[in-house]
Image (cartoon, rainbow, N blue to C red; front, top):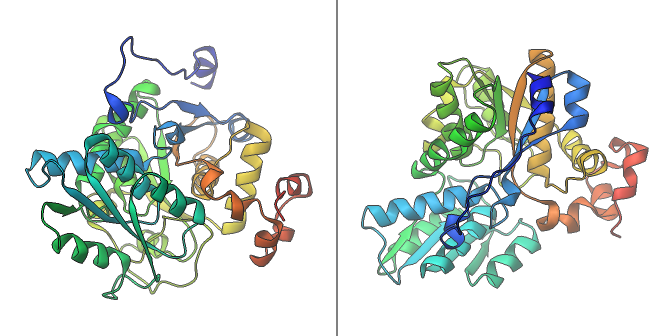
Length: 356
């Protein structure tokens, strides 16, 4: 299998016609074979280059999916308002989709998110309300504030990315089929982290069905999330402790999107933040890929899963977005020091902490 892929590169094909606006450009992203890690494991480790979506992240798919679903159901009419609670990338995707389709966009988000994301949302014409980061059970959680704000407006919807299963459906209809086609149906495992659960559930469901159950689907989890313990314990939700440098992934509950597939998962891996940060630098150093921490976590997880499965396997994951939206943190000497990661970064990679 590995030799065949070398002889037939995973190249991107293009249509012979122009696509229809921003939304027509969402999806059909290439798969990138990660050479260093593939050679180290004897496996074929491939990442879906979701940073090549027109809005710059995997969340373009969910954004388009939930808006189209609302349109088809008659819930959103011309000149309407789309409201969402989001840690960043779904909001960015929605802001793009709304501009391209003539809707207003309002975003509520935790005030712990990077300034790059907040600034970009405002540049895209969205109204942004950063609010204190509190637990989902708290009425002031950003998701609940978004829901209540949408209810107060005429011709407005709350897209509810966490529990609106149109999110997972978008990946079932696009991401899963693309990976299957791009690998000629030879994908042994798929693994990624989850926030809403849409990418993992939708992609995983398609690959499981198409492979007749042969493709293993695993969840990758950052610190501060309960999902690893939930899957590995057979369904016990433990109290959420700690936090992570990653943004937009990890959970304290089973969302409706994840709930559509969680019982069919084959396993889960917990990935330390230090490993994710090191991989941010290593991917840049060895592959020339400038990716965010969530993408790096997914790659660490794919590497560890490949080691578990053994040589000759093909393991796919999601390269969620680029590092541009997080660079003031990930490449800052002061930030790395504040997180206690100075000693966790190998000497040959320390050169990438270039910001004071």
